[in-house]
Length: 304
Image (cartoon, rainbow, N blue to C red; front, side):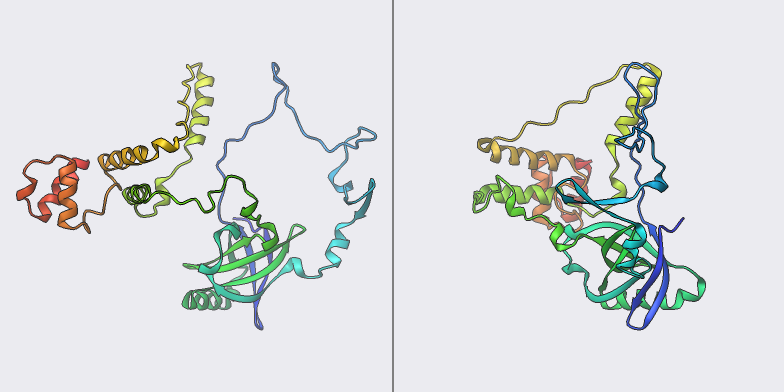
């Protein structure tokens, strides 16, 4: 794995040389561009808009629009000079409770690793100190011409770095239209919605989820390659009318219970009365004379 940034992470007078590595990778299906009706590739080029000639990347500089059609040209060396060393260091300014950071601020996750064996001890010291205190380190660093706010946290044997959005980059939700505001749901609707949430609840298992759209795109490509018929997916459900809201919730709860799996309460934790109610809904015969374990077994069979 190749580091995309190298520098030092500093806390107090301790400095640890580290490398920054991408923690995730995208599996998106990528397409090339072609002119319709031909096999001719379309390519993007950097072209001088006045001469029409292509320009080498090394000859391109940055320009800031200052209004009136005027631009200030800035060289990379000048950008580096206004923050010397910032592109090679991440200095910790604070330690905070990780739970206090609103998830909206999280942007992207990276792994941090020491650049050599002799730096493993101070690296482990910072990692274990944060794990012991339940804190995350907050600091900032410059990478590829942009300053990032970052939260560094312990994640097992490794330090994870989360780039964060600055406060002024988070939009005010009050600017959104059609928010319910002071609208209150009816008590029965709220109770039924809570039942639906409970019936669909279960442990977080990321391996249970897959990019099904990517799978369908790959199947579409393979079907077209082999000349197969393309099957059109059904349209999504229409929005629920307010007048049908309670009925839709009730049907959703019944459907969830019949589906089994994570639906309904955890059978290992369910009380005998809860199991008897589920047995009644599954119309299990002889339920009135069953003990708790027999009810759990019968409900599990019915749900499966």
